[in-house]
Image 1 (cartoon, rainbow, N blue to C red):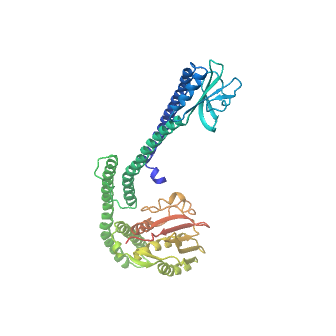
Image 2: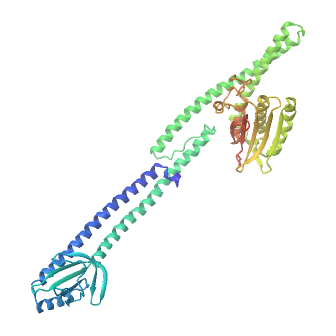
Length: 459
């Protein structure tokens, strides 16, 4: 329900319901008070009219008139009593004067009175007057009938409010579903765009409402962004591709010239340096083309189901001699609960090899590197943990960008060697598989890079 109440339509409809209920409650209270006041005035007026009418009689005529009045009281709402000056009952259904009643001709509320047939515990109003012959005349009217009218009015108002709130809640439920469903569709499309699918567009329902107008604006912006990025990427890929042939020819010329020189020739050292730089330049262009190939998502057709443990064992065996040569400790841990992965074995091997190569490169001699696979809430996660200089927090969001070469914690902030494309390739491979790459600090100091593999993969 918390997600549903976050939408603006839910809040507006909820606010409307609250205001409507508050206003209805005020209206209900005012009407109830006015009706109750009116019925009390009506009850008091009836008592005073009776007192005024029967005050004209005296003696036996008064007694006869009062007895006759009871026959016309079909609902039994009234009762009377005639008492002497000492309050002793002389005639009428009342057996005693209600407690606290003054004989002054004014009606007052009473909670209890006694009849010859028994005591009555019910709200009512009573009035007492002195007759012409010196006796005391008391009238009592029960409020039950008047209270029933109040209850009918109260029930009618409550039913009216309820029958208004229920359709309002039903309308809220219906009205919020469509905008919420459209927002969820936009959110899903946005997540795919964030994941790198720039060809994705926000859904447009065809109704020219505010959401459609906003989606159309964002789609137009995405069209332009995709066009610009495609142009820039195309230029970079074309340059990298077109320069590979002349660079290959240049290296061949340099190599033939170098072969024709003697070892003691001073030009040989210069040619060796030129060959080395040419190889580095060709490797850089090759890495650029590799990243472009992976980002184009052209290799998903080669996905197969593979065992994560076997992949890590092969990787560990491949890099163990290099670690021993550098006097480093390369450990392997595989959780038995880790299942299978769905992906390209060659690409995943390449991505993990890049992570492991970086760990071996930055970890000092006699350092420790841990390669492990664990179960992370039902999804396999592969970690590469070392005790090297680590990755500064300010660089962790930049290390996957092309050509970024950050300074490690122990390098004095100087850029590291390399092309700055290794982790870009890792990020591209992870994005191709729908996996997530994260960087953090190792518990004992150093870098901790992990690839969390979605359990269901991308089939």
